[in-house]
Image (tube, rainbow, N blue to C red; front, side, top):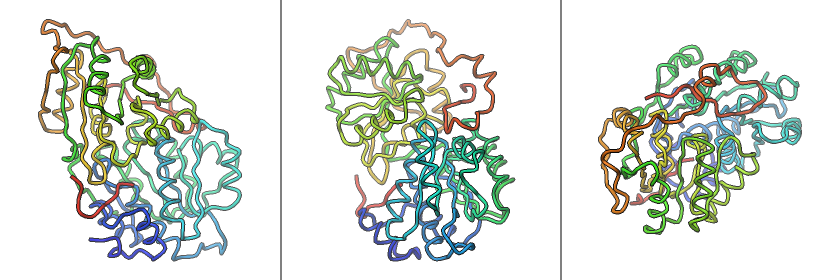
Amino acid sequence: MLFTDLGLSEPILRAIAEEGYTSPTPIQAKSIPAVLQGGDLLAAAQTGTGKTAGFTLPILQRLSSTKASAGKRVLRVLILTPTRELAAQVQESVETYGKYTGLKSTVIFGGVGANPQIKAIASGLDILVATPGRLLDLMSQKCVSLNHIEILVLDEADRMLDMGFLRDIKKILAALPKQRQNLLFSATFSTEIKALADGLLNSPALIEVARSNSTNEAIAQLIHPVDRTKKHPLLAHLIKTNDWKQVLVFTRTKHGANKLVTQLEKDGITSMAIHGNKSQSARTKALADFKAGKLTALVATDIAARGIDIDQLPHVVNYDLPNISEDYVHRIGRTGRAGSNGVAVSLVCVDEHQMLRDIEKLIKQKLPQEIIAGFEPDPNAVAQPIQLRSQQHQQSRKPKAAGNGGGSARPPAKHGNPPKRSFNR
């Protein structure tokens, strides 16, 4: 199947072609016609398979072929995302593939000044991409009206629920017109997602192109057993010995990310950290430098697990295994995207053996292990409790304030290129 087979207009097809794409991914091939029909949709697919374009392209098509009921430019589409990085990524797709349609869009999120966002909204928009907190903040200031919304998208809905946005989402839903098209996209069909869908969607089309929590077959997964104190030397060894040019590294904590960056820099490996304590400008610069090849390693916490979209990213390293097994799937899904191959390496110490078992149970496969010479783990090592975020904080965490625009609150811990290019944005 080609994009030209999906009923998209010439301006949209021209923009797609300019990016070098010809063939839709499976989720795009199924969701684009469904969205064009105008009904509600509940869709799930592995991370990195193109959910963003699955709703962006048909939304652009629908808006460009119909006039607003008010006869002037009014906000007709609202796309909600859980994180700033993902919001920026979605907005980039809207701009890229809608550049010949004449439609206007902007993105709003916390961590930056609101005045430019307020001005962009006031100038007139067709599409708004937003994180829940900043949207509620601007709604309370009467800077944005949702009275004419025709299409609502909840992107990465499972992640939004994980981050405690349910109350915020319900407030936003209450401000929307009752008659609208609802599109719910998620990496998984959890019980919570199904409950949200039951209350939001009206006889939705259901699309699931891969088993929930399965991993992409294009990603080679490997475990390196190692002592906890030798993780950093092993990572530096892997980067230098294999001449890795671009590697995304996940740590469990913000402090751990900062510490690892300092250690890697001492090893002569250019790196920067990206996490919730970094300013938005610092996060944007780190991501831009990484994409441009100015950094060898980008060290991230799980805030970036679904917000980083880099073509041909070759390597992902789990320096620490995630507290939540599902996050393993989202982390490694940053590689092996758009039909390319990728490698996901996890450095696992004795403290994380139960986490590894939980991950293997979730993805229903036993991951291969390889001990690197010189970094053999001590067979007599005793597991120590993993220092997670303050359990008191986790247990007493209250719903997010409206104005924080996409924080990183988490629930308590649980134990060869194709002949035609498809794309994942």
